[in-house]
Length: 211
Image (cartoon, rainbow, N blue to C red; front, side, top):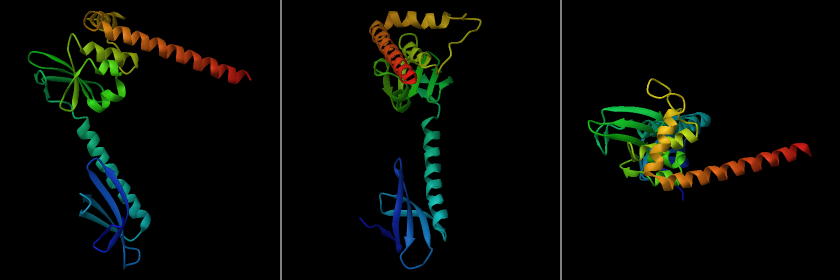
């Protein structure tokens, strides 16, 4: 469908979230281009005008990238409120994954989209959604999220005055066995399958090299 605004034909568009950025070419003036931000497909504003087509395309892409960056910054803003009350301390374990504490309680809060990327379905089932976060209550549920981050080598177990080498993981595993034994069984099965797939892939690559 042909789109025209202010005698410019819209030739390209980029959608970023709820926003759209478009590139228009004048119907009557040679080498006359514009990029707009557009709302609802009909409201065009903040026009940037150009006489060079390459610069116009660059501006279109640049405006879209700036919007993406703004979305990322909003997406990964540390939480100030939690299901357990106002956040008093917040530590980012991985981008989009926060360990929070309040006056009385705390836990792990993970941006939902990040949880879908990093955590297994079995792990996500142990949490609950609150706003834009998947939350894991400390003591009983938080070890599930931490265990998965350790498995993926995204989080290094601390070694300090409280935990000697291996003690932090042992504490996590004891909690999992107590509060989430079904998750433990599913995790062990998943890890075993991943190990078999890795070994099979390794053997296949070796056979290919030996040919």
